[in-house]
Image (tube, rainbow, N blue to C red):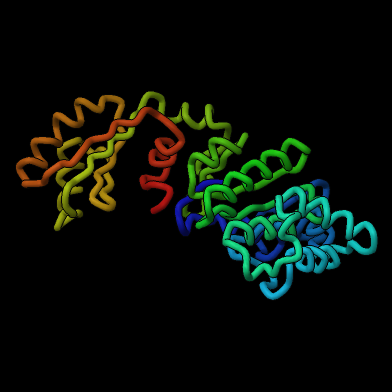
Length: 281
């Protein structure tokens, strides 16, 4: 599930998990209606929140034992499942260390472990790899792949296009609380056809971005442009034609270009086409 900040991803997750009541429509978790039987529906769900939801003064094993009891596990079943989860998240050798001494990536792995203890049918993961080391990130991505291959449905939100392209079989793009498009990567890429993304990197920030944007739009007959962190971005089926038009304008405005990138259609192109902004905006 892709969307810029404020698009409605967290609200959607809140509704699916029964924390926020939708204004209309219904939510089915398997055969159970979340609005009519929320406690029953929530038994089928595991949630990996964006923030760490662990007790830092407890060990990883103690955290998992605690959350396992919250899910109704007990006795030998609980001990066995905690041992299995520790193996899945790759922390058997650090199981008796306090979570507060873990790296950010290791904490996130325990976070995931707590969410899958009860073997949910649906796992919701809200940006689980933000701000972590590459090793933990790779381990999390592999774990997600394996869980999905074993039959678990996963809803995954991310700011990293490469993660989405690697993991997801079906993608929804959300902005301003609306689902703009949904489908496989191949289906979404068909929405932009042969459109390429043009990134013009400037040596310095533009003093009046709005004035420059207005001039670019007028010059290119309504084509959409964005400027962020000294980079002008637009989409076009004929990038050379667009550049021939706008480069003289930039020269006249005494704006110096450091480099120009022209990228073939990809998921980022689709996102920019549908929302008019990049995923990180």
